[in-house]
Length: 269
Image (cartoon, rainbow, N blue to C red; front, side, top):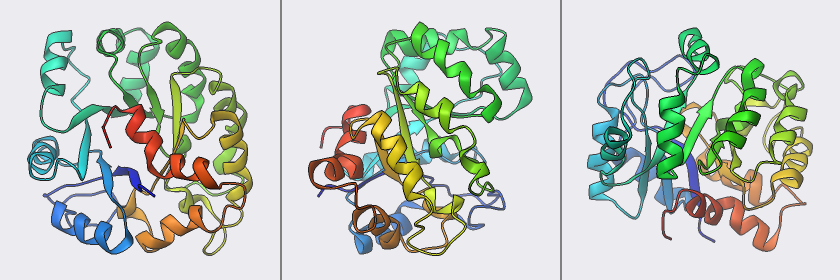
């Protein structure tokens, strides 16, 4: 089985948020964890709290092209041209973009059409875009995905915040399921242990994952960890899915655990 983590963060400078580890997480550390657990590859989402994380991601991808790919970011305060975005993406290991749209200014800009330059360029480039946003604006993905059908969207962590616990963590489930109607919307089932009220293997999470899987299918639901904020081992993150979700088996399991994310971001296995 090809196991690919759909979301990790690598960074070299201190300053992470409280819910993440407080010391840098570098490629050698990640590779050691991945090798021990049996993870073949990982999508690096450069840490937004480290201004040098994008450049570090390129360096890492150059050194380990079969282990790390990158969904990079840039500030949204000043529009970029399509050529500038294409140049940003035309660097080793870049397979897409990722943005945390939690700042009120970014939300306001999105709703006012102030990010149309980003969506239009990504659509023209067929560039995967990963997002996480306040739940109140998650319904806005519906018209966005319809308007820009060539953007393969990914919703990070099922669009759940790091402090949320069940059942409130899934109070947006109906919206999340409805978005599956768009063939260009996928979900990362990443960091799912964090919403559980129980201990490993977090059985209270399984019914929600099963409903999401039924809506998105194995082609559009991706296992992942956001490992630097997990309080279990990487191997336990894997086995939560491989050993403790009785409804996820065979080829479907293989796809969720790695093959589908590689297909979604066009990272040849």
